[in-house]
Image 1 (cartoon, rainbow over the protein chains, first blue to last red):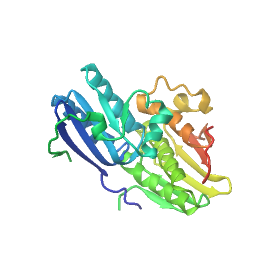
Image 2 (cartoon, rainbow over the protein chains, first blue to last red; image 1 turned 90 degrees about the vertical axis):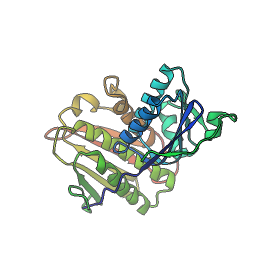
Image 3 (tube, rainbow over the protein chains, first blue to last red; image 1 turned 90 degrees about the horizontal axis):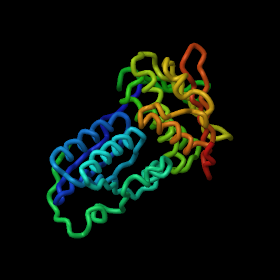
Image 4 (cartoon, rainbow over the protein chains, first blue to last red; image 1 turned 135 degrees about the vertical axis):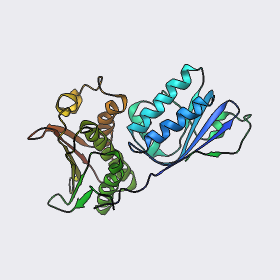
Length: 128
Length: 152
C-alpha cells in the first residue's frame, strides 16, 4: 500500500491594479486542477480584468491543468482582458510547446514583465 | 497509507494497481519515475516519464470514471529504455482512442482528454494502444533513458 500524499498545490492571489495575480507552488494534475479552476473563477469573479498566473514555482503541469488555464483564458478574453502566464522552467514550458498552446497564451519571464513596470503592488492573500 | 493503491515488484519489475481515482495519479508517477532514476535516467527524461505516465493515467481514469475495476501500471527498465504499460477495462476506450496513435480522432473528446495522447506522443519514443482481452485497452509507451527522444 502506498501513501498517495497530501494535496500538493498552494495558491495565493493578489491584486495589482486591474490585474489579478495568482501565484502557484506545487503540482497541477488531475487531482489539484479543480483548486486552480476555483481560484481562477474567484479572481475573475472579483473583477480582475487581466489575470497573471505565476507558475515560477510549479513543479508539474499536465493536460488537466492546461484545460483549466484555457478556460481561464477564454473567460478573460471574453471580458476584453489579457491572460498571462509566468513560466521559465523547461519542464513547464515543454507542455505548452508540445500542444502549441505557447501561441495561445502570453508567456512571460516574470510577474513584472506580465504586469508592466507601472503596476502598483499589494499584499498577497492566502487562497489555500 | 492510502487504502486501495499497491506497488509490487513482479516480472514487470514494477507493478502498480490502484483505483481509477485522481488522488492516486501522483503516487503512480512518483513510483514510475523512481524506477526510471534507478535505471540511470537523467532528469529531463524523468520529467518526460512523469508527464507521460500522468497523461496515460488521466485517460484511463476518464474511461473508468463509472467503474470500480482497478487500473494496472507495469513498468520495466532495460537496454531498450523504459517500457510502461497502462491497462484499463473501461467500456468507452475502444471507440475513442484505440488504434494507431496517428489515426486517433480526438476532436470529439473533452479538451484535456483530447490533448493527452498527443502529449504522450510528443514525449515518448514509441506509443501503441491495443485492445485488451475482455475489454478496455493497453497503452504501451517506451522511453529512452538518456539522450534525445524521437517522438513516434
